[in-house]
Amino acid sequence: MQLTDMVTALEILKYTIPALIVLISSYMIVKRFLVSEITRKQLALFQDGQETTMRLRLQAYERLVLFIERIHPRQIIPRVYQSGMTVNDLQQSLVFNIKTEFEHNLSQQIYVSKQVWDTVKGVKEQEINMINQIAKQLQPDAPAHELHGRIVDFVLTTETLPTEVALDMINEEAKKMLSYNGR
Image (tube, rainbow, N blue to C red):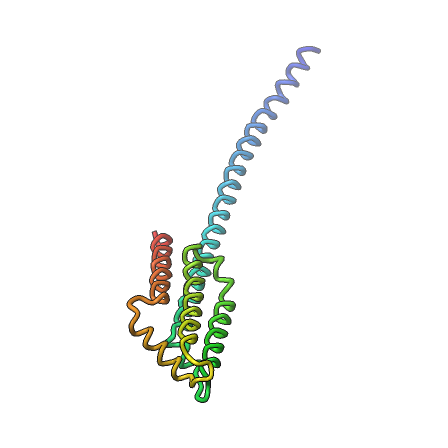
């Protein structure tokens, strides 16, 4: 009986060893395929995320440029100025509009560098301070055109305005981001 048991064991091994080899080979092939598929999908998701992030950052730069342009004296004064206003009225309207524009763009800080955001905040404060300083030199109930004229004179006699510095910085950062992502 021992010979028959041995023949039976050999017959069983004759079928199970190739089956095990096929099973192990299949497992390794499927595992390798699945790992490469998962890696490919993760890379695709990462690239989609990068494109979305870049799009959001570019939109943030655009909105901050628009903010800086909108608070520039040559843009904001004609938008706010109304005949019959006093210096105090124009001053309050200008400051209110600058603060409102800034608050509307607060969320953009998460998409830009700290340096750009600090510059944007600084420009807002400098514009408000410039308006307030010039308004202090005038009578509060004087006609608003006096404040308007003084602000225009200040803008024309100042070599580099804070708004120009901020626009240059935003443009440079946006160009760096585009050239970095374009590689």
